[in-house]
Length: 229
Image (cartoon, rainbow, N blue to C red; front, side, top):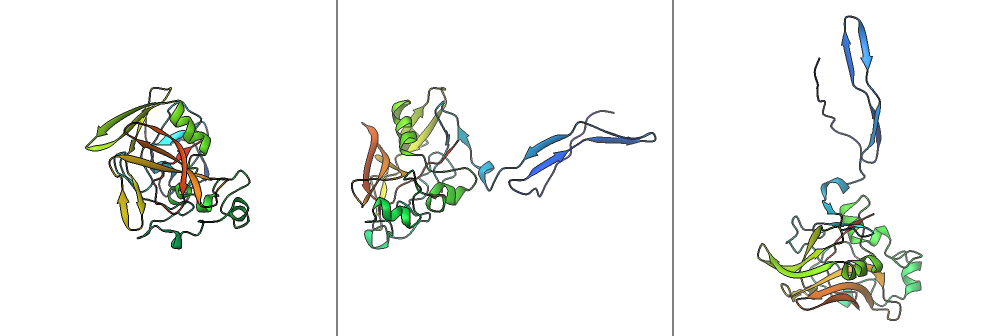
């Protein structure tokens, strides 16, 4: 008589489980309705996201960060870990053409980084990935951008058609062993190389006056904001 709760632990990732409640007394055992659920893959359940009313859901913080205001980690394009210096000598994608990037497995047939070289997927797992050119552009053109200071950090409050918002910190970028423009500009990688120049890739940029899409040198260290379908 009454309700009860049973906690399940040590479940496997990406696995379907079937559960039934039951009760036993002197007459016998009666079973409740069968319920099925599938656990998430990897660490996808530990990162929060916001539905801005766009084609994808946006994470609330950058890869390597634990809050929206933290800058997080910086990655050269096509790389999935941080490093002490960011220059052309230690960037394996620098100077590779579209066909070379495809043949070496860096990008797929749609010219986006494969999961092995996607900093969001490699670090967060699950279905997290870097936003495509169109998804970055959608964020820039279909949302309201308000330059603000949040918990002492400069950046943009980006409000989507749904009324929900995310905060993008002005994290600057890394070149060599130095950090540039932190607090005044932001650079977020997309997974697509620039087709007309073998040294660049597309990114979303912003400062206190403007924001938009552009392309620049792949060996610079930029931040990454993951998305989900």
